[in-house]
Image 1 (spheres, rainbow, N blue to C red):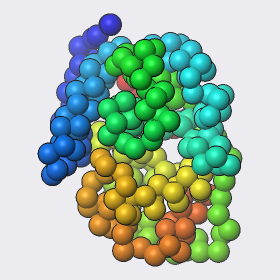
Image 2: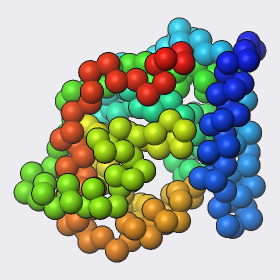
Image 3: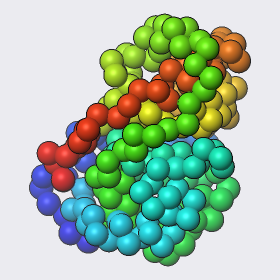
Image 4: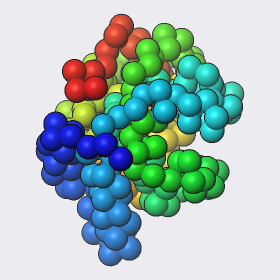
Length: 236
């Protein structure tokens, strides 16, 4: 494994921010989160190999997520292209440590080729480098003003003015994600079915109605990705 001072510095600064996000009150969840932090710390300190990440992705991930990581709304599979690098790493680490309940991904992440911090770093780097698809599944468009109001009221402070996400906090970009996937995740978080989600996020979402969750999902699905927008391009 190749490391460099630059990537170790990135890892330390990022993990300090992530620690507060990942640490949950429950002891079992806290133990899981400590392991996730450890995996992420190791991965972020490594020099990424994009070509290796592309090879792994093509072999293990493209069947479900698509060759260009554009996802598949018919199977409620998320778009991963252009996603925030630290968020991608966190989700891969969460699923490898069973800190996110996605059984099919648990089996995938247990494969030797995907079970090392270097592999996680490389796959996340490859996905982050891809241009996000300009085509996403959308809702019926009937309550977009409501969705925009909700996003600006309770989501903007973490996810950004344009739903672009945040590298230091491993906060995902939401713009242009498939409507069905956004809605499914919001519903799951609203009832506490995502283990490592900040309790404050659950508190904000659980008071929203089904129609309001649909409205904000539809609003976000219609925000087109920025051309060439790479969260950590300057550090790759």
